[in-house]
View (cartoon, rainbow, N blue to C red):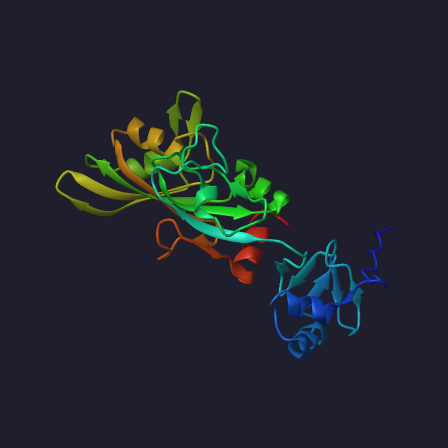
Length: 251
């Protein structure tokens, strides 16, 4: 016997079209059209009737297959970490941290993964603990893209070697992708894609194949790209970006 899908209706909740409008999906009228067209699900159940009331703090709502963050107070940020800043929200030694780049934020934020102090680029911050945990855990396979300036010249078969796996002192690591994007004199710019986050793994991986890293920048985490975000600045993630992050980790 198949298990019956729970009824998402909450008599004490908020009308679904109002919840969608508050989440920035569409106006209330346009949200009603989305519901009528069968493009909205609540807790796994397609909703087509108007006036359904839900609890925004507990309801899992998808629009066109992408989850919508509707719980109050949820924050999702992309930040461009400059070199010399610790991937932490505080430091007992008084060194500069991510919190110093967010002086106007009062939320308690988690940073997704880490970048060593000398590495620059994209880092995500959120107070959505479950999403942060899954994004950082290698078992969910969220890909992270890095741009590295290296010394030396990559061997012709390097892409194949990296994607097949290289043995490091703490075990093998496989790149999900590798390509040369530019070169000048004895310096080369390469792009590396990985889904794991062992300490200094990109630097150690490239050093192992004879390409010491001179500069390293993370440019992408899953669907979120660094783009032209200036060092030390941050931006709010868009609804679609958040929905795709949820999808990447199965939420």
